[in-house]
Image (cartoon, rainbow, N blue to C red; front, top):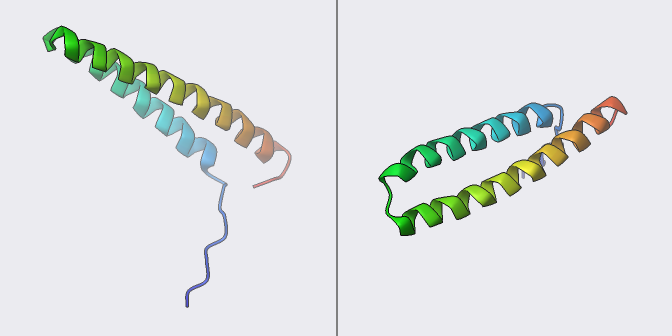
Length: 75
C-alpha cells in the first residue's frame, strides 16, 4: 500500500497567484462576451463574475496567510 505524500505547501503562494490571474482573465473574457449575450445570459454572466470576485478575495486572503506562514518557517 503506497504511503500518503507529505503536505508540500512550498509553492502554494505561486499556485494561488496563478489561480487569481486565471480567474481575472476569465472575468475579462466573460465581460467581453456579454455584448453578444441576451439580457438573461448577461445577468448569469454578472452573477458568475460576482462569485469569481468573491473567490479572488478568498484566494488573496489565503495568499496572505500562506506568505505569513512561509515567513515564519511553516511550510
